[in-house]
Image (cartoon, rainbow, N blue to C red; front, side, top):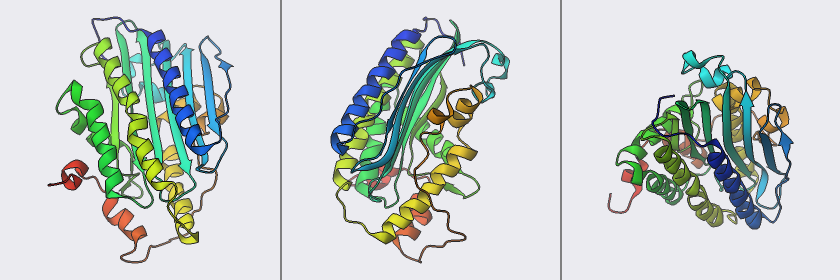
Length: 308
């Protein structure tokens, strides 16, 4: 966290996150045909949570788009480990986090989150981002995803997309597997550059690009033919997502440490997962190419853009 000259407005951020939650749930439910659940849970010290969970429909097997506005007497260690001088201080925070697990193996898993922490009027930060996790990647989809990510960042600095893209590759990485979780996107944390209004505008731009980044990919792939082999690989790859969330993800640790409702914290875990002992893909297969080529950090726009 860093200092800023303009005052943070938690209520404005919270209102934006809630409206974004509704927009995303409505768009995804319209495609799937199955609505999200809706709950209102009051916070122990004010604030509230609005978990919205997708129980499964024709397109998604499970999903969650969670909103939380919370207050506490002390930052959980997952939130203060990069800023130890803030440990033990009271805070106010709001966040939106989402994950969708598709039925069709050709539809990528999609994740995004945005968050805002305030410890005092001079100590606050934004964070978040989005990333794409395909089982059977399409170059067209990857290029579109990263072009939308770059478009979201471009008004705020020429190098911002590259910075956030590199941070995403570094964060969404499974060191015990030596592979990225997917094909990347954006990730930023402890962000205060330019003050509150500029930082909030950047956060809104990223939030407003979530649906334009994902919906064209979803529509293109949701009716793709698939069979038992592809479904088995989907369930196998879901294990990587579970491993990341449970072993590495700071957001999951924050939720567990902050005393939030466990059902909400773990709602993003996939409904079905397979772990096959020492499974190896066939050489030269699409399954093998995923890990040998796509799950390695790359400059996707330069690599895939026409004329590159």
